[in-house]
Image (tube, rainbow, N blue to C red):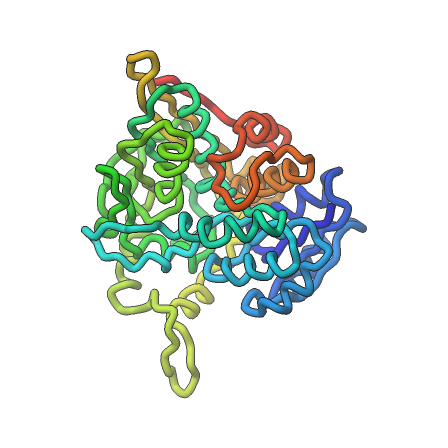
Length: 402
């Protein structure tokens, strides 16, 4: 099979490593708006399977030409280009996978009900078209969203009725030499954290205040107890619908909370207060620049700091409900040490745990093990083949019965 990896930053480079080393893919195209970056990745991988090309994700027709004759496109660029890339895949009849949705599709304010969350809209917009074209679209198949959705499905499959699904993302890591250094896209970090978060409660998706719901959550050792906050994310957009409605398990409440350190919270709140999060260009001494782009340019590239990351992460879901009339619950998570990951794979654990799941999805697709058609989120995957493949790439799946 032939794959295109669009965006060879911190996460895309992980997927590139995995697919270039797989038996299932005989061609892996490394594509980026920065051709030099793609060529550096090709040189580093050093495989005859790989080629490097320049692709601009804002050029739908150009992408369609580049995708022609390819089986699968892995979208590893920022989510604002998702629809452009999905349109290009339709034109080229190539299947699609991404790791995040465009949260700016949701315009509601805190307290308001969200009629259709962004990832649900993305699935509905393309589902029929992809089915007619004979291709599939795997949405949000990274770690969170992604693997954690599969973990929630694992718990739900053991229940007659689901009550709560809580997604918890913890990382006690730090980057040597930096006081503030996001381990994933700075643009995505700024967007997600400053947006009003969404929760699912009382049969509605509802926006709440940014930085709300703070609690101390006890992550598995060695991560330990960390403060977590509600943040706008994809898991609570799809889990209540697909596990609750499509699979018929029900769901009363769902949220996503992530660890944010005091420095992160203070810095990002200040950015928001003075407008440094804005994507709209302003005139700065005759040059038109977006404030958010300036902030991102001042921060280190996540793909270049993995060797200085220290600490551990644990990402997972707590799914509770009823089985045979009795209350049951499962905490299912994956964990990894940043230094161990770098020493073994030359990637930070943050990037690695996102890039591996989307690569596994690609491999399962190539193996013909996906029975789904159209466009769907990770919880619609059969958990067993996905989870069984995690250890091959150094990831784990740990279960605790509650």
